[in-house]
Length: 254
Image 1 (cartoon, helix red, strand yellow):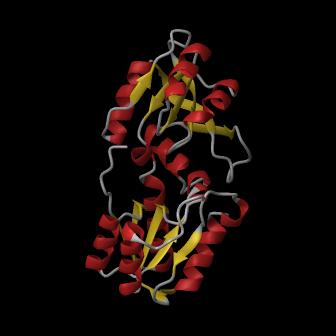
Image 2: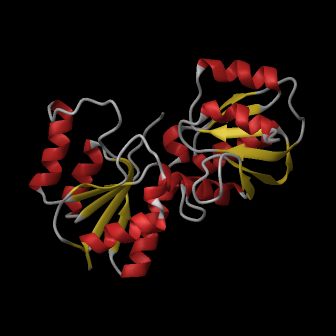
């Protein structure tokens, strides 16, 4: 068992949370009981995840996508009220880490995605490692776009939406990636020397940028590319402090 304040402090320090200018609050978002033994983790603090936490009698929920986003309505009504009420009624803490959990060099979403694909990290294209979100590296071996697409399907258990550029490389060796909704980093990825860019989402403009610049693009799913960081963080906490951790994957096709 660990005190809530210590757990939050450890997470804040390990993820360098104060270093990020984010769209939301990183760290403790809803205060629950003061001592924590059971931590349930998931990608997003949706009602289904909260219900799992209540059933499991979790002391804390750890997520990548929490609450209190920039420009969202502040009133606790409707869906938002039901979520907050679930947490408060059951005395459950909610901890959320957004950009800090994307960037961590070992536990982060980018790092965990690269580990599963076998990509070799070289450098961040938008800052130093630990705070940079756009990663550049090399594939495990030279591969075709079709092979990369097939690997993504196998690793993530879903087919990516792939944009092939006629101007792009036939064999891919240099790859850039940023999990989640980072499709607009495609220009930086191309300028950084990547032959392919992998992220979670796609916009209408992304197709034309990829085709005309000469870089292949794989939209592999926002949820699918960000399943692994929060699970890794939960496992790290469990191993370090001998607390119980359970990751729950609430399916999301986006």
